[in-house]
Image 1 (cartoon, rainbow, N blue to C red):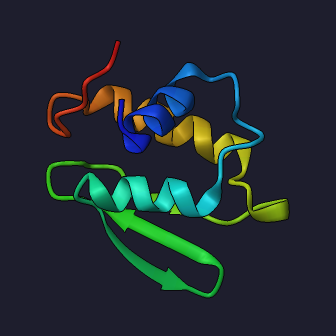
Image 2: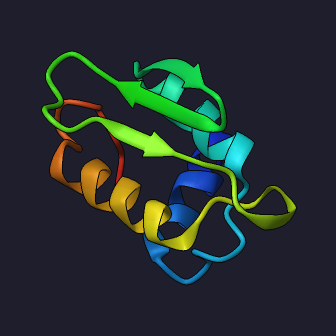
Length: 88
């Protein structure tokens, strides 16, 4: 199992929302075809075919903010066919 798949499984499990690494989350989204632009501390990500825009900010100690992790998880589950995710 690849590192990307392990991280994706951890993200989708919902059990580690407080410890998801911010940089790894951004890297995952970029690898799934999202384009990123940065305005100050805001990392704004969008993708063709995905209606929602993701706005992420780093939390404490390099971790992503838990409520933003939930938003990303919801988005990934909604668009899993478009993103070609192997979930399960």
